[in-house]
Amino acid sequence: MSNEALKRTPLFEEQLALGAKMVPFAGYEMPVEYSSLIAEHEACRNSVGIFDVSHMGELRLSGAGAKDFLLRMLTNDLERIDEVGAAQYTLMLDEDGHIIDDLIVYNTGGEYLIVVNASNRETDLEWLSSQAPGDVEIVDESERTALVAVQGPKALQVIGELAGKDWTAPERFCIREALLDASLPALIARTGYTGEDGVEVFVHARDAVALWRLLLSFPEVSPAGLGARDTLRLEVCYSLYGSDMDRTRTPIEAGLGWVCPKTRSGYVGAEVIAAQREDPPAEVLRYLLLERGIPRHGYEVWSPDRLLGQVASGSHAPSLGRGIATAYLPREDTKPGTKVEVDIRGRRFPAEIVKPPFYHAQ
Amino acid sequence: MGAPTDLKYSNDHEWVRVEADQATVGVSDYAQGQLGGLVFIELPSVGDALIAGEAFGEVESVKSVSELIAPVSGEIVEVNTALEGAPETINNDPYGAGWIVKVALSEPAQLDELLDADAYEQHIS
Image (cartoon, rainbow over all chains, first blue to last red; front, side):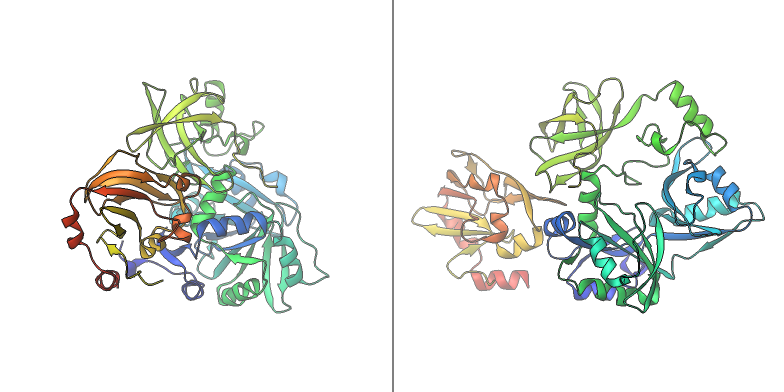
């Protein structure tokens, strides 16, 4: 894809001014790193990191049939977010039980906001539109919405100062309106992708720069790129669409059975999930911890004379100082505690299958 | 940081400090900046042969892997094994504590093919 074809978020110029290294990601020109990926990772673990995630898609679903429609389209139990301001991590499957996308659905009162992966936005919109009955309206608000993730142990303190002393932060996995700095209308969701406490702040695209500068005015806040976002999420074993799951994998294979409650039926793909609970799949997503060496996407996993699979996500884990990876491996032979080997450019490095997560937020 | 004038440089961004028939090899400040924060290094061993133009080790940042390309030929007489526990030393002090290997030169004439600091600065500009 040529650079001309790449889209930019409203924060593109701000990022360039901060010296960001830009890379193509999901059709956008996005900051992968500002000055140091590791420093950005640590800022988020110890203080506050802010991430421009405006590339993500925001779809608003309203109408009398919206709830029933989403009950059918999404795997998790939407009844559990009946209260206005509640939110839920959930999956959208096709008829074969394969994952179309993972997303967060927010109950914003009389309608639902769903936040989807940038790379899947068009697919999601087409799929939902093709399935929606006449009494459901779907609006794509992605272009006019900016989203900044504010993550880390001091994130709530920073947002609290901006929102004013009369404002109470939403509970974990809830969303609430706020007026930041007495002038910026925002939706504040207590969600994130780093394992740390923190929020994701939705504002109108025209307010993105003002929000970004307000956040950076706090000395405890550092801008962080997609590189740190990836190491942070992998350490806490949050799945990445396109690496840890895709249209060829089911939630049971991807270790996301917990997002498909056993009590539920009637959603698209439910029969496949029920069948795989009875008759488990041959391959599942496993988590590998290395003593030394950095596993990367596509590297082979051996046992030791049999090829078991390939690394899905792999990286150095800054919080552990070790190499970590995910891989789809034969379920029976790779239970936690099993020793395997990763082929790193022709040399074998020992790895152990471990239970997720690799890292617990402090 | 400008390239120190007492060193020679390869097009592959390694530097060489010559002392008699021995040379110290490292990567340039420009190269460490391009590589980003290093988190892993694969070093050769004392006694290994270094062959100009061929890989003698690897450095990895979180996001990428890069080979270390030998600027000269010779036998490795010393390896900076301290880098294994602290590869970021290459980022912090590329021309000092971040040195990688010392070699007994087998073909000193190769030094003439390397760039001086001015030519290297041109090469990276």
